Length: 133
Ligand SMILES: [Fe+2]
Ligand SMILES: [Fe+2]
Image (cartoon, rainbow, N blue to C red):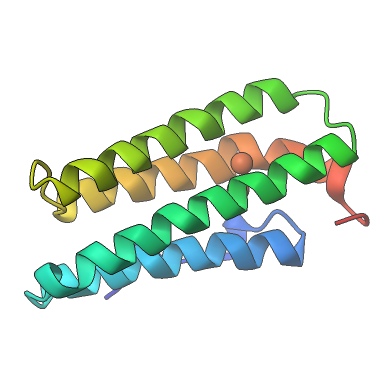
């Protein structure tokens, strides 16, 4: 059983962005499966790093489109991204220093953050991006 399942409720109606969001769901599930199977020690390090890089790539993509299509709430949205990216880089740093354990509780926190961001923040740009991105 995956921890987090993508369904049409998460769709922003833009294929390119939905695909990127699905990638996050899949990375979180890879971490979840590894921990459930007791393989966390081997898998968490590299996958966490991949997640961090994908966060940067995805936020940058959205911000580029927000700028290009003059999304009026861009500054607020960018602040949310910055806070999220900061959390992830702190997590990676602490994990690498052995100060942070990646467990199911932490994955649930990441998964909740992601779901809330898609449903409450990302959705708002839909009318500005549709037919353009
Ligand atoms: Fe976003
Ligand atoms: Fe997003």
